[in-house]
Length: 76
Length: 413
Image (cartoon, rainbow over all chains, first blue to last red; front, side, top):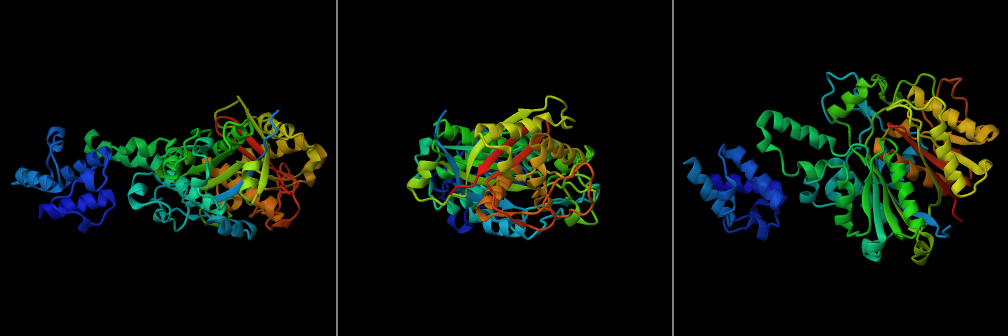
């Protein structure tokens, strides 16, 4: 379950509860992540799913649903 | 010269013998050692297996979890120590003029554990896996930076790095800033968290550490003939210091007044102290001269007393050369016998110990003092605390690089 794993990684990184995170949650807008958190989270996701997320792709993520869908597309 | 006076009004200890002023002081006056086997990493291949770790430290008591994850342990200790010091001072940072408040915190090494973790990632996973937090966690000024953010302090903030003298230099420089009118209050002291494989391996190779692995609590034995090196410690000693009128206006509890500061350099060798101990002697002398204090009014010296052969012998020589006949009347003690050596934080927790000694008229002992060394023939307050009224007390710190610092505290009545 990609979304569950993404949620877990983000919650861990940002010190928030997993149930605060939905598909619509914005990392920077809702969870107060800064640009350094965003880089670290992308690294953790790359490790977890053994993929590469180029910066230009990461810039387009509006919410956590976008991230999950992107990863599903990559590993499919 | 300025007539502004500087007093100590808040104490925050995060130490191997207790977190918080009360448990710290209770351990020191009861001769309780904080030294045990290192738990932070596996010491199987190490010649040194002992250290003085801070026990039961929970960063979330002092900062939120997310913030704590972005800090190396040395920064967490500093933020925790600052919380404790503000609380002890019955002061909120909102009560301070943030532009007239400064932060000077010493750290000898900075975020060495973070460095080691991220170096491992570089080697095993490549450069693209080095954390974006690596630099902001590792750099040694970040304790001061994070304390500023946590407490909204906007005056001068900086870190002093002079190895084991860092904490005392920090307090001395903060004292000067207040005395000269640059600021009215400061968060100062030292912080360190270097019980890591690289730091222990490095100090071990220097033959600086005690290898008394079979008796951890007896390993730090300053001035004792059988001493064989220091025991690495960690933690933070943070003090709130204020200009006297600033403190009186808010009815602050005053532990002691800081009246003098001396800083010198050996210019001799990277690690060995000058065999004549001139630098250490002159640092104490300058602190006394700043306040015009007669030698025979110094009742207590919280010695650097690391438990290494050279330090204890040469610090003794410095005290004898400066104080002459009066040297034997001074109670000297090394609280490192209990806390281990907190490196850049040593001056911080030892200033706390010295301030409390003055306030409580109680001199904490040098524990593990068993065998007299003919080269160390002063009164080291062996093994048991002594009740004594203290007029003036010095706290000494001497660092690799030949950095010497001494601060002079006075009883405030």
